[in-house]
Image (cartoon, rainbow, N blue to C red):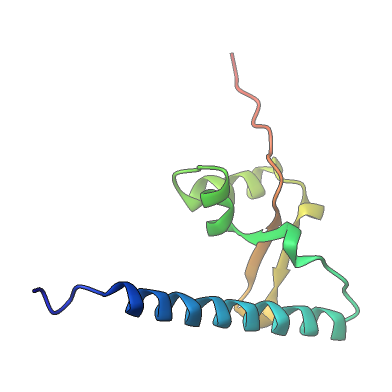
Amino acid sequence: MDTKTETKEEFQIRLAELIADTDKMIKDTQAYLISQGEVVDLASWVTIKKYCELFNIKNTETVTNWINRGIIPAENVLTIEEFNNTRLIKAVPYQVKKIA
């Protein structure tokens, strides 16, 4: 048996730890935003990477380009400087107009 193969139990433990870490990060972010006078429902905001996963976009550069071009409105982009300038975007589909 390959020693690098993860058992189902090991995977479940690792997944539970990841979920716990993510929950802590969300709570820390919410606490920070509230302390700065911002009230943001983080359930509707996601990272660029997560946005790509949710809407089946192949690379993060596409979404970054949409932000830079204004396809994603500025009010739907939140930059958290204290978290290494992490950008969150509102998790809604954005319409890219195709040039005929």
